[in-house]
Length: 253
Image (cartoon, rainbow, N blue to C red):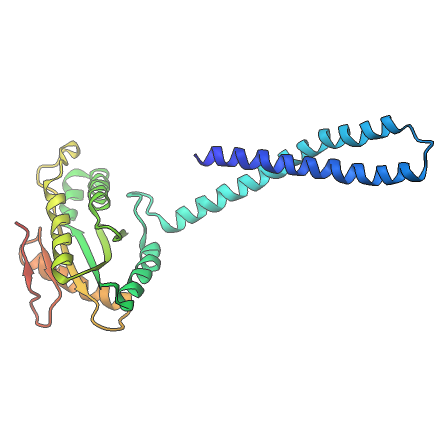
């Protein structure tokens, strides 16, 4: 699709440049002929039409090639700066940029803004027992599940290592917890058999709701604390950050 748009753009630009070249060649010669009538009119007209039609497309082609190459390079640089190379999810930088927009929507009264951190359970053991290539396969598989089942308007990103971040605006705390619980269940029930693992792949998730004008970093720190308690409580579950030392447990059935 992108290549087709580039070709159409190249053709349009070539036609415009060619027409402009013909116009700006023809008009001065026409004025000159009106002043000096001895000139061979047909030869002059032919020259000022044919020559630009030969020169302009060639110039257009080289200029447009350079422009298209620069645009593709800019798009690739943007992708490298904002997309995690392994999972093809938004990276940490993109997460903070997009989650800030969602947070503003929540602050504007469109719902409750939530942040969450998900961590692959026993990931170090996977790397130790099966190697880093299998570990990468686990991250790709988990990232695919999270991307496919992310709530509408929600954001899923890879923060780094085995950690993923989620953000979204929800109508109620129950909706947020249900959406996160569905993600945890989906990862646990997904088919990871192609990875050759001897244990199931699961994630633990810590969820945090914005309660005031807080920074994303502060919210993620609270979500990370809830994640810690999810690990302590047995993994493969969602924990919601609470006021006490032990956040309320939202078990995944």
